Image (cartoon, rainbow, N blue to C red):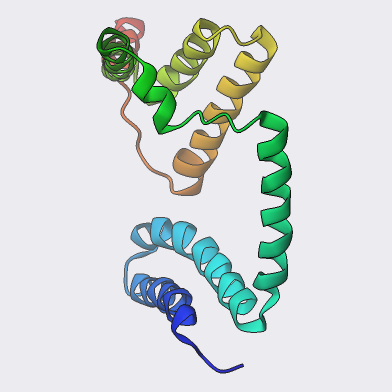
Length: 177
């Protein structure tokens, strides 16, 4: 198992994430949580990748994946949905899609500003998925799951303050009056 040129990139990522983990231990408790939450899983994946490349198991997997890809291409009929499909779109359709994306982003930003993160996440996710004609069950489960994930990771896990928006403080003030 001698290091070759193709192994250095994976070794770089192992050292990179290990370095960030080492540096984060110099931070205060709350400040080190996010680097650790991000870098520890990345280090595990980088170590796994480095091991796979060193052991040579990758070549056999690559041949098997190439065969699967050839089968999939034959089943699909060599249809390319990437860049070629975008070339077929006329300029008006490209502009419409761009404005659609920008509108959804603007709606999310306004919703966060007005209602805060913890209300904007489920409302936006539910609205977007329903607009894209997903089922109510899938839309509700995704919006609840995303909200729960953000709440667990940021509010409970890191004890962070997430922006409450304009609505929550106004309601809190109205309730106190």
